[in-house]
Length: 304
Image 1 (cartoon, rainbow, N blue to C red):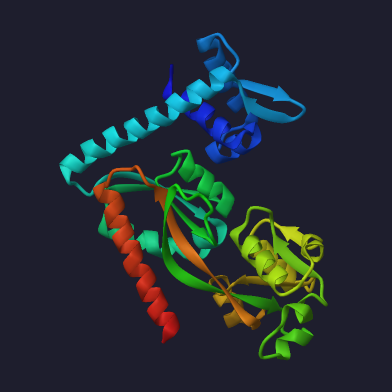
Image 2 (cartoon, rainbow, N blue to C red):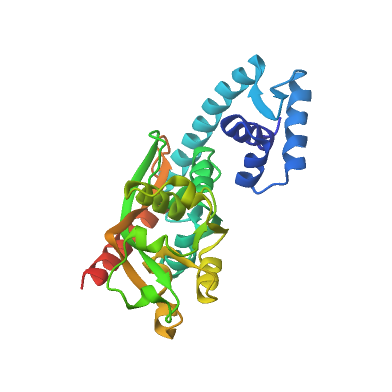
């Protein structure tokens, strides 16, 4: 029985969705289904019930899921214990990052780290915050860097830095002349938002509801799948949006967009997310220390 089949089963069992498991594992849905059927053939029993578009574990599936959790935990401990014995800053790390972080924070950080640690092989997976947390849960990646809160209390979450979210509008827009913008003023214009599962969207929607805006008013926004798409739509005059201040430095220099602070201000955390049970690996510890130092410098520059 291959590790891959069990890994695919574990992802489907955690998410109770073949589609979401395929996204997390970067596989096609038919490939996920094929791996599950192979495992069911191995055990000569069904592991999932698929009825009325819902997926649930059979009794046999629950047994396999319980053992698979232990297998992956012990496998990770074994692998990391051997690496720890060498005390060598080498090996490979798979990092996952939400879209905003991967585009505007990680390139410089990972580039600097790689130049000082040539023997460490780095892989990067990009998804929204929900997808990255799922990858950490399923041991698909070693470390996640996400925006906004993480609900899974079984994961280690360490705040890296604070990120301010601001309103963006074209230079000729009426809001561009204001020193700050309330949510009620903002919602007088067509609103552009990120997709479901995005950390930016989750934080923005929660903030708006706290300010008394009806959730349905936010749900009816123009939904786009990346920060670049959102900025392009705002530049084209299709509406206004709320984005990370870290994502608009180029547009501000080119004067293609204007940023206006929200009133009251809105901020969220960028955080490292990893499994609790993983042993300390020299390469991982070196990367975390490097990233912590990088984030402190970024916070100091912002404060100055």
